[in-house]
Length: 167
Image (cartoon, rainbow, N blue to C red; front, side, top):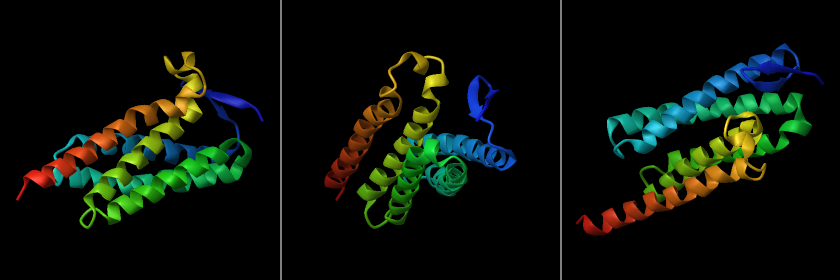
Protein backbone atom coordinates (compact mmCIF):
# COMPACT_ATOMS: atom_id res chain seq x y z
CA UNK A 1 0.00 0.00 0.00
CA UNK A 2 1.41 3.38 -0.93
CA UNK A 3 1.64 6.37 1.39
CA UNK A 4 1.04 10.06 1.08
CA UNK A 5 2.67 12.84 3.06
CA UNK A 6 0.40 14.88 5.36
CA UNK A 7 2.29 17.67 7.13
CA UNK A 8 5.46 15.60 7.11
CA UNK A 9 3.79 12.46 8.45
CA UNK A 10 3.40 9.50 6.09
CA UNK A 11 -0.22 8.33 5.96
CA UNK A 12 -1.40 5.13 4.32
CA UNK A 13 -3.34 5.74 1.14
CA UNK A 14 -6.16 3.40 2.17
CA UNK A 15 -9.12 5.07 0.50
CA UNK A 16 -11.75 7.70 1.25
CA UNK A 17 -13.36 5.94 4.24
CA UNK A 18 -9.95 5.67 5.89
CA UNK A 19 -9.22 9.36 5.28
CA UNK A 20 -12.63 10.44 6.57
CA UNK A 21 -12.18 8.37 9.73
CA UNK A 22 -8.64 9.70 10.10
CA UNK A 23 -9.86 13.32 9.85
CA UNK A 24 -12.46 12.68 12.57
CA UNK A 25 -9.87 10.81 14.64
CA UNK A 26 -7.26 13.58 14.48
CA UNK A 27 -9.80 16.33 15.23
CA UNK A 28 -11.25 14.47 18.22
CA UNK A 29 -7.75 13.55 19.40
CA UNK A 30 -6.64 17.19 19.40
CA UNK A 31 -9.78 18.15 21.31
CA UNK A 32 -9.09 15.41 23.87
CA UNK A 33 -5.47 16.41 24.37
CA UNK A 34 -6.51 20.03 24.91
CA UNK A 35 -9.55 19.37 27.09
CA UNK A 36 -7.76 16.72 29.14
CA UNK A 37 -4.89 19.08 29.89
CA UNK A 38 -7.23 21.93 30.84
CA UNK A 39 -9.28 19.65 33.10
CA UNK A 40 -6.15 18.24 34.75
CA UNK A 41 -4.71 21.69 35.38
CA UNK A 42 -7.96 23.23 36.63
CA UNK A 43 -9.21 23.36 40.20
CA UNK A 44 -10.81 20.00 40.92
CA UNK A 45 -14.57 20.19 41.14
CA UNK A 46 -14.59 23.67 39.64
CA UNK A 47 -16.70 24.70 36.68
CA UNK A 48 -13.75 24.65 34.25
CA UNK A 49 -12.66 21.16 35.37
CA UNK A 50 -16.19 19.77 34.93
CA UNK A 51 -16.79 21.56 31.61
CA UNK A 52 -13.62 20.31 29.97
CA UNK A 53 -13.97 16.86 31.50
CA UNK A 54 -17.44 16.61 29.97
CA UNK A 55 -15.93 17.33 26.56
CA UNK A 56 -13.00 14.97 27.09
CA UNK A 57 -15.01 11.79 27.67
CA UNK A 58 -17.26 11.91 24.58
CA UNK A 59 -14.28 13.13 22.56
CA UNK A 60 -12.36 10.07 23.69
CA UNK A 61 -15.34 7.96 22.64
CA UNK A 62 -15.06 9.48 19.14
CA UNK A 63 -11.30 8.83 19.12
CA UNK A 64 -11.92 5.19 20.06
CA UNK A 65 -14.75 4.70 17.58
CA UNK A 66 -12.75 6.22 14.74
CA UNK A 67 -9.78 4.06 15.79
CA UNK A 68 -12.04 1.04 15.41
CA UNK A 69 -12.80 2.07 11.81
CA UNK A 70 -9.13 2.74 11.06
CA UNK A 71 -8.21 -0.61 12.60
CA UNK A 72 -10.86 -2.49 10.65
CA UNK A 73 -9.36 -1.13 7.43
CA UNK A 74 -5.71 -1.72 8.42
CA UNK A 75 -5.83 -4.29 11.23
CA UNK A 76 -2.27 -5.57 10.92
CA UNK A 77 -0.79 -2.08 11.33
CA UNK A 78 -3.32 -0.71 13.84
CA UNK A 79 -4.15 -3.61 16.18
CA UNK A 80 -1.92 -2.32 19.02
CA UNK A 81 -3.44 1.15 18.65
CA UNK A 82 -6.93 -0.36 18.78
CA UNK A 83 -6.07 -2.04 22.10
CA UNK A 84 -4.69 1.22 23.49
CA UNK A 85 -7.82 3.08 22.34
CA UNK A 86 -10.12 0.54 24.02
CA UNK A 87 -8.07 0.74 27.21
CA UNK A 88 -8.13 4.54 27.18
CA UNK A 89 -11.88 4.76 26.74
CA UNK A 90 -12.60 1.96 29.22
CA UNK A 91 -10.59 3.44 32.08
CA UNK A 92 -11.93 6.93 31.33
CA UNK A 93 -15.49 5.63 31.52
CA UNK A 94 -14.79 3.92 34.86
CA UNK A 95 -13.09 7.10 36.11
CA UNK A 96 -16.04 9.22 35.05
CA UNK A 97 -18.59 6.92 36.66
CA UNK A 98 -16.63 6.93 39.94
CA UNK A 99 -16.14 10.71 40.10
CA UNK A 100 -18.36 11.13 43.20
CA UNK A 101 -18.19 7.72 44.86
CA UNK A 102 -14.47 7.02 44.57
CA UNK A 103 -12.49 10.16 43.71
CA UNK A 104 -9.18 8.25 43.70
CA UNK A 105 -10.56 5.89 41.02
CA UNK A 106 -11.70 8.98 39.09
CA UNK A 107 -8.20 10.46 39.21
CA UNK A 108 -6.56 7.18 38.23
CA UNK A 109 -9.03 6.39 35.44
CA UNK A 110 -8.95 9.79 33.82
CA UNK A 111 -5.17 10.07 34.24
CA UNK A 112 -4.47 6.64 32.79
CA UNK A 113 -6.80 7.36 29.87
CA UNK A 114 -4.90 10.57 29.08
CA UNK A 115 -1.54 8.79 29.29
CA UNK A 116 -2.87 6.01 27.02
CA UNK A 117 -4.11 8.62 24.53
CA UNK A 118 -0.66 10.23 24.38
CA UNK A 119 1.11 6.85 24.28
CA UNK A 120 -0.97 5.74 21.30
CA UNK A 121 -0.26 9.00 19.51
CA UNK A 122 3.49 8.78 20.05
CA UNK A 123 3.60 5.07 19.26
CA UNK A 124 2.08 5.79 15.86
CA UNK A 125 3.60 9.20 15.08
CA UNK A 126 6.77 9.47 17.18
CA UNK A 127 9.13 8.27 14.43
CA UNK A 128 7.97 11.17 12.24
CA UNK A 129 7.96 14.04 14.75
CA UNK A 130 10.75 16.51 15.45
CA UNK A 131 12.76 15.52 18.55
CA UNK A 132 10.85 12.21 18.86
CA UNK A 133 12.37 10.95 15.59
CA UNK A 134 15.78 10.90 17.29
CA UNK A 135 14.62 8.74 20.20
CA UNK A 136 14.64 4.93 20.19
CA UNK A 137 11.33 3.37 19.14
CA UNK A 138 10.66 1.86 22.59
CA UNK A 139 10.63 5.37 24.11
CA UNK A 140 7.74 6.67 21.99
CA UNK A 141 4.94 4.98 23.97
CA UNK A 142 6.86 4.73 27.25
CA UNK A 143 7.83 8.37 27.80
CA UNK A 144 4.21 9.49 28.32
CA UNK A 145 3.87 6.62 30.81
CA UNK A 146 7.11 7.56 32.59
CA UNK A 147 5.94 11.16 32.96
CA UNK A 148 2.23 10.52 33.50
CA UNK A 149 2.24 7.78 36.12
CA UNK A 150 4.20 9.80 38.72
CA UNK A 151 1.84 12.74 38.12
CA UNK A 152 -1.17 10.48 38.66
CA UNK A 153 0.35 9.05 41.84
CA UNK A 154 1.07 12.60 43.05
CA UNK A 155 -2.52 13.68 42.37
CA UNK A 156 -3.87 10.66 44.27
CA UNK A 157 -1.48 11.31 47.16
CA UNK A 158 -2.54 14.97 47.29
CA UNK A 159 -6.21 13.98 47.25
CA UNK A 160 -5.75 11.52 50.10
CA UNK A 161 -3.65 14.00 52.10
CA UNK A 162 -6.29 16.72 51.66
CA UNK A 163 -9.01 14.37 52.94
CA UNK A 164 -7.02 13.56 56.09
CA UNK A 165 -6.62 17.27 56.95
CA UNK A 166 -10.20 18.27 56.15
CA UNK A 167 -12.62 17.51 59.03
